[in-house]
Image (cartoon, rainbow, N blue to C red; front, side, top):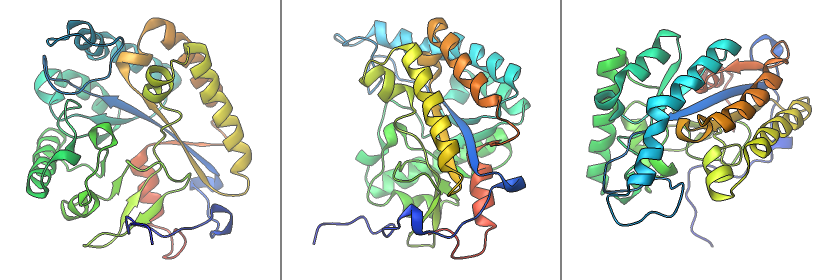
Length: 294
């Protein structure tokens, strides 16, 4: 037998109980905007070009453009289209540019925990160190937002063997790290179930644009094609379509122009779809009869 994670069992999407999103809608759509902060001269970070010796000025400054410029352009676009957002926040953002989080909070957007900084991976920590990290991040967000976050996405989609157990113990209700399904599914933990809400790794600007070098127009077409296909698929099963974005990538003007085109296409179907946030998806699933969701 192969080693197994033990978190969930196999379940074919075509054989599951049916349900609907609010108002009988079949496709839930949410935007996950990653608000990230990086250490200068050390640690991890996405690269526009191969980095040289530290301090890597080119890539650090390129990532910082997202917090200084790109995120504000995106905020303006979300306001124009009246799009809700799940804001995935590195807790170090509150020390660096807290006004960005304030701007999203004021429009009622969800604040999701996204570790301390994307300069590190929590999966490399000991269990005690990871538990301390989760506690630190949770307390920081609670202090600034007035309530603890419902959801967690690990920096670099990093999890240790114990992460779901630690998140459940810390009071989290859902996690976003696993891209194994188009519906939410329940994960087993030592303290009871925690929900896995689908988070995209294909409709995601880092893998698409930075890893596969997809152009701005091509990435926008990817979003549109995925959306149109999932609208058809959702006639048979309720589905979740997430769009993962980073301000230092899609906040660049030439990419923003094409992203606007893709989001305008989605908004044209507002009457048919549920434009929502990851936390609202989780809350809806929690209210369904037991056994509806695998």
